[in-house]
Image 1: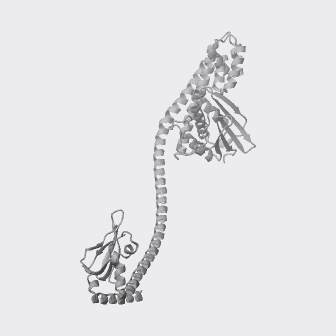
Image 2: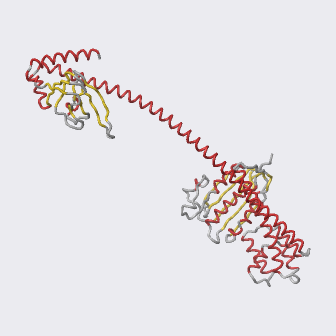
Length: 473
């Protein structure tokens, strides 16, 4: 670079001497004051300027309106060289920064001046090449600096992304903790408000049971009342079969409502009705059975409320929820009783085969059965069918299957039904999947099992819940 500067100075000295010797060239020398414009960005270059004295700064105006200073040219440099050579519009604006003197050669007369002043041709060509080399080396250095800056920016950008992600995760944890704390406070108040009426309801059902038992005469009525207290739900097809049996066995019972109620009585209760049909009106015997069944429903519902409150408190970490050795079928039967009003217009098929007891939380599992059955009820029309089946696979697994004959679940939705906050009930869909499935999935996972859903080939959806058989430690 020192040699280049030396050559440039020598060439400039030679050019200055040639200008002094030629009146024509002296006429091409012009003076500029600070702030004077040599050429403007976006315009054609009319002259090539060889700086003899002073400095000119090249500025570029960007699209956002800001101005960038690119380079300052001093004596021995050409201003407007690139645009002059290529014939393109200027990419910069040249402004005098100090008092300047420059040899100004018109573009259309450049070749003539070079030919008329042959002594200048070779030096000016060398000077132009030197200028172009300087610009090229400057561009290479700038490109290298830009690459280094881009690499640094990329590293800093990645670091910023990581920091932002950690900050976002931290914020989400804080929000979650705050929500859980608020939920805990709400649950504590809710549990207090719900437990009291639930306990009162349970006490009232016990008193009703005692009063009925005390008021009975110890014979048929009392025994039928006891049968009602211990009644279990029957599937729709079984009720229809028993109704046909009742119509043959009790031909004098004409009202279909009475036939349906008698069909729900166990065989031993029906024998008592048959024996006492002349002594006690059949309406009174049915009322005794219904009273026992309703009191049983009240007790089951009260206990269910208590279990749900316990489950909610456990979810919010406000209380411990004990694990017990349970028969899962008991919870399924209780759930069917609680949802009897939703299920009464549907065909319910039960196949509750013998299964081993396992260590589980009855209240939480009941939430699972409730959520699945409620979703099925939402999608099924009157006359739809729900099948509930239990079975064991060896001594290690319990399988619960709940299937319906509804429209099924669209394939694009199926992978998402267990996601948190996913629901179709507010999307105008013909099927209803509520938020309960995410909670159900979490409950089954906490029990060491898993839940999956599939569409049946014959139509409808099937949920399969697989739980391990284990002992409480």
